[in-house]
Length: 391
Image 1 (cartoon, rainbow, N blue to C red):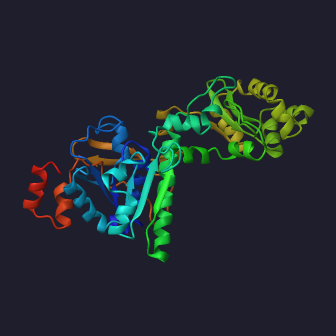
Image 2 (image 1 turned 180 degrees about the vertical axis):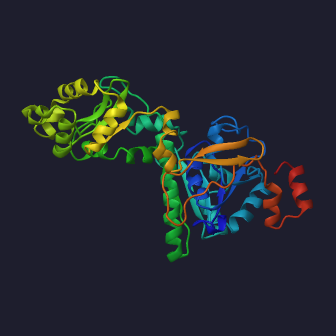
Image 3 (image 1 turned 90 degrees about the vertical axis):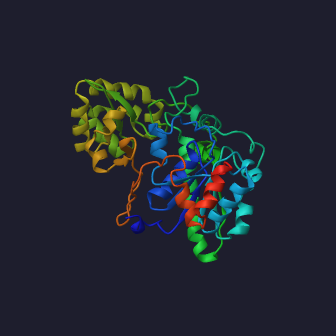
């Protein structure tokens, strides 16, 4: 099955840990790339916690695993042998570590000019913060999202998921794929770089241009959309729902559907600017109507009227939703030791070559002997490496 996947012709050496780097590699692995996860024999573990934990298991599926002591010359020699026939190397060390280990892009380029080298860092490979340790929440703070998340005047609030980590990983994977496409023309690899800070700033999107173009510093807006009003959270008879009714046409549909056509005719709400200026009064009027029906009733009624409306789920509700099930966002895989696991699928589909979760996260060094034998090491040499603590 792997050979039918679109990235099956590519070999990836995975030096990543924690989240941002593994997120990049997961994209490549799920579309069929042959991924070899390289770990130090004596590595204490991962900041994500136990290897058996759900987070680690979800990040490292579809890989084979080798242990290799890259601090020793003999270990680096093995890595260089692997790199000779690899297409991609991905790492997320602190910017200077790969140079100290002598596994940086310039070194590997001399061994394999076609290598595409993906690096994820906290702040970039150079510049004033290059040597700082990177962490998602630090990047969230520096990248502006914490000052626009949360209720007005609440003070900074982190996003509820590691958006800088995930963004940097996805951007790195995108860059690697672009570099592989460009290599088909030039025949040369290149160094792909992403960072938590770059990703977070990029993901500010329209909030960033509110400052860069409009000269406005976006404030916290809570559950209201910063610019598209009315869009927000509204209380119902039995809970809460999201309603997005920005723009004249959508606002009229909403006003009619909730039995309050007078809202559309009110001069205080005549256009986007006035609805934004009077958002609190408008939201209160809408909420006065929504509290008289259940969430399910409003979701059906408003969607039927062409007004985007949806529930606000807890995590168990997310994966119980029929559309989430239809999209196949939870996928089962069998772990030889831990049994059946349910992992999160990719966020996109290809019509002919969809992603595939084919194998669970490997045990540490599970395929060491197998991988070494593939590059010409016999049993005696492998035993010698093991005796010296190289593998």
